[in-house]
Length: 51
Image (cartoon, rainbow, N blue to C red; front, top):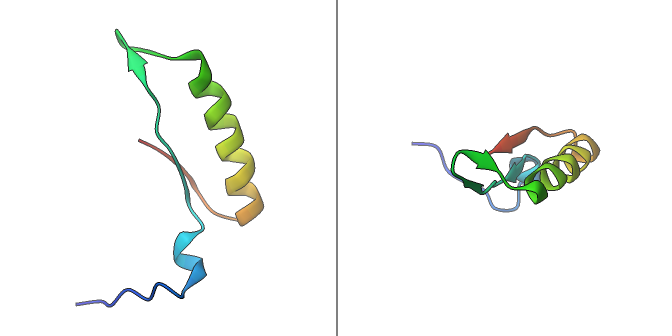
């Protein structure tokens, strides 16, 4: 079993963006969130994940 070290900042470099959809379509603000998430992930040298 692996242990989780909350002091390890590298474990927190990925960026998650949660998007809302209605009737199968993304909301207009979701594109802004994804764009800002991409900028932040690039700055942190992490990955952008969508949920």
